[in-house]
Structures are given as C-alpha cells and as structure tokens.
Length: 251
Ligand code: SF4
Ligand code: FES
Image 1 (cartoon, rainbow, N blue to C red):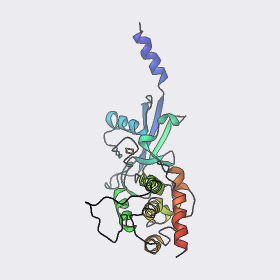
Image 2: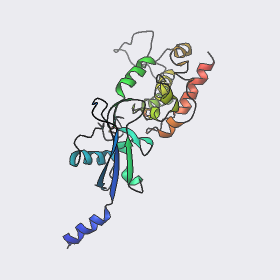
Image 3: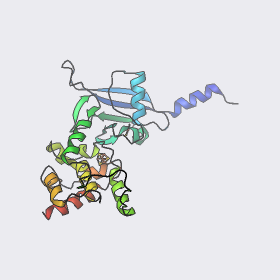
Image 4: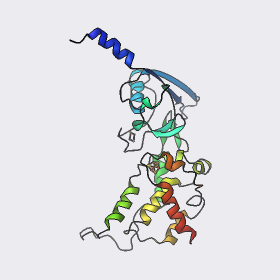
C-alpha cells in the first residue's frame, strides 16, 4: 500500500527548482525598457523549455510573449537564444542545464516583436523571393502528364535539403548575417543548392550567379560553421555552401 503522505514528500525532494531568466521588452510600447525577469519553477520529468514557458505563462505571467506552433521541432517558430546559443525551445530539455539556471533572449538579426518573439516570417519571405525559391522550367508543367522520373539518390538529396524548417537559427549563429543585413545566410544558400541539384529546375550556373554571386550571397560566407553547428535539422550547410561556391567561382 502506498503511503500517500511520504510519496508526496519524496516527489517534492525529487523535483528540483529551476530559474528561468527571460528578456522582457516591448519595442511597441515606449513606456517599457529592456529588462530581465526571473521565474522560479519546479522542473518536471522530461520538461522542455517550451513546457517551462507554458507553465510560466499559465501560472505566473500571462503577459510574457514567445512563439510556438508544433511543439515537435517541425514549424521552426520557437527558436530563441538559450544560455548564449540559438536553439529550439521545444527540443531543449531543462535537465541539460546542471545548475538549473537558464537565460532566454530573442533571436538576433530578426525584427523584435516582444520579449522572446521575433518576426522570422517576413525575412524568410523576402529571402525566398531574392533567391527565386521555386522551380524554373521553360515548359509549363502539364499536371495531367505522368511526372518525369528522378533518380532515387537525386530525389533523396533534394529531400535532405528540403528538411529546412526556416527556424532562423543558422542566421542567429552567423557572424556575417549579424554584420550584413542583406546576407541570405545558410538558409538562402541551402535553398539555391536544393534547386541547383533538382533536375526539374532548368536554371544555369549563370542564372544562380545573378542571384547569389556576391557578398550578400555565397561570397559573404566566412566558413565559420556557426550555421551547421547549430542547425537543429543537422543540414549539411557548409558542404552545400561550398558546392554553390565552387560553381560560382567558375563564372
Ligand atoms: S538551415 Fe537549419 S538552422 Fe537554418 S533555417 Fe533551416 S533548419 Fe533552421
Ligand atoms: S514549436 Fe515548432 S519547432 Fe518548436
């Protein structure tokens, strides 16, 4: 028979307290100024930063702002800076931090909305237009015709690069992007590589050079590897940037 009283005591002893310090600022409100706010909460088994933030929002501070949609590392909206490194809140467990102290800041390089919330969507949209992120084919696609076969290894290579979730973490980890507002970053260069290897896209290397053959494109990358080191989808970003750069230097 379970001793309910002792059970509760032992559970209390088991769960440690953690401190989450959050950057608070609303640039839309001239009465606020940037500050940090610390919340102390009980860590539950398997707790992620997303769960911790929901707990703070629902039990302590209904005014705190942060973004999320999928809670499964798929939508890319919960990226933020965690103890100095850009990461996905929904894929980061609080147990990783041995001293239980975690500081959260909004992702740099994007427009700050409020607290931990930034606008990645408009930047990603502009980048997609800039690198013309769509299939360019001379003939109009006949959707009634049987699709042209693609070699399985080529289809797999395209799929690999299509796994990008537009979280913006590669940009937040990139020194060039922090210095150059218009740099398309690993996410943009990865996108061009995706279309360059796709046989459905008929663009030439000259066409890609017009889009990324400058310092805001493939020649802006300093190969510091911040993008690949932090990408939560483990995309081969440096390999693909090098692939595009090799093509572009021949122009
Ligand atoms: S390349 Fe990786 S880090 Fe960059 S936006 Fe895509 S998934 Fe995020
Ligand atoms: S909530 Fe979608 S990636 Fe974290």
